Image (cartoon, rainbow, N blue to C red; front, side, top):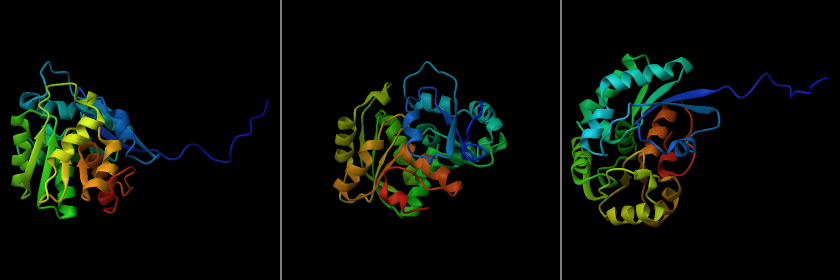
Length: 246
């Protein structure tokens, strides 16, 4: 029996992004929607910690030992960049700490490193944003740490909303998220940032941007955008302002 194969050697050459996710991430399918077909995501998770979403959890999942081990777990498949996909874990102790997380990942062998909060700072610089509104699923204490992080970066938070959740963040429906995003909007804000990589946002970005006429920046969106930028690849999906920055 003869097989009539197409005249090609194999599938499109794969390019990889390593993703270090907190143990409770439930939105892998949202991540894949941001990347081109030739890009594969290789996930590693931090160890399970029996604590609610909180400042304590953010500190545990950003431990350098955990990041080092997770980085080494994805290196064999040769990712071009490794992302620490955690917003709170990368903003809780300020800009210097965020940079130290990237250094930890690179020392473990990654060719390049990104964190979600670092990607936020890159977007703010690219879009020249000086005043911003934020919406988070966290409690007031953790939301305050995000305000401090942005203030240190020279970006003023003019209004914020938070859901006060200690878990199950991926279960929040789009209507609730959209209502809270609109509640966080302010005429002074040049953009709205939606924190947490476990909060679903993909399908509401475009309609909300049309409604408010300003960028809706979200955690997963920014992380994938920063990774793809280092790979010289365009980001897929919604987010008109970011799509223009490549």
